[in-house]
Length: 356
Image 1 (cartoon, rainbow, N blue to C red):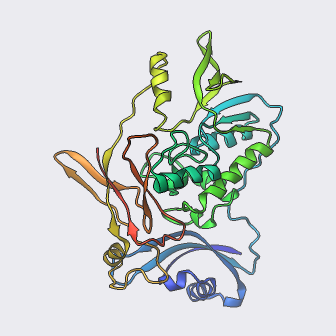
Image 2: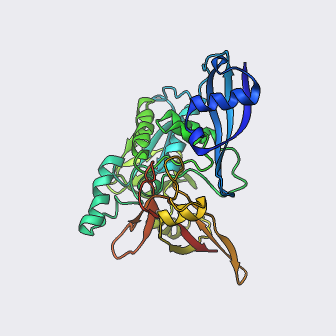
């Protein structure tokens, strides 16, 4: 028998399956020996009172083996003979577009102006070490997009986004921690995400798709008012319907579209600053404890929202236990972003506070 329960436990109890079995036994009257497994479906922290609790939604396997998978895998077939679709950009939009194309029997041809996620890391290191920005390989450009080395979080404020369960499943299928399926604020971690991205690329190639690095789209090929392909900086062409997944920093793409009188639509942006707090201070405030978060709680974060003279001010892109990174994508730019490793072990927290 499989049952679902809501549990409210102390942080130290939430990390031990054996302790959770004992809690379930007390809640249900089923002996611990009959409980084969406890799978966490949802996890959130309630730190509103001095005593902190972890709220869990769990699946309990009573006299039944844990045989059902934690997530639903996607089957990616061979599309080597499928119709091509050209995808410009290998950030999250481009990678997921390529995987979805494979599901539909199409052959994705991904062109990325930057380098692969491992080679890109060397250029990112040069920014801090030598103060040199490669305009084609940096925190914004390259396999994995801006989030690969300067974010790694997987949640959204949008109330109209629909279900993101499939997205999380795809990440897990390609190597992300199963914890992202249950955490209220899923976080792969900047240190773990590159391998997940590599696995996505390897899947695209195994299925018969193509991935081309250091390949910049310079123009669309248009015939009879229809986009039929792209031309790169070397004059090479790739033919097929085109998906632009170029991200917000590829300004040359948008200048080109505008000058070519291709209809584009402006999107509102928020402008703000990145703050830096000692992580220990935020832990003490949020967890009401002088010693901070201790061994069993994650690095704390916060949410700030207010109105100033009729305009909204809010925090976002919280990077608990993270770093501020120089995120310029070209020379003579001063741009910063934040990143957090999987274990959120650094001594600072770095939220954006923006005005809209």
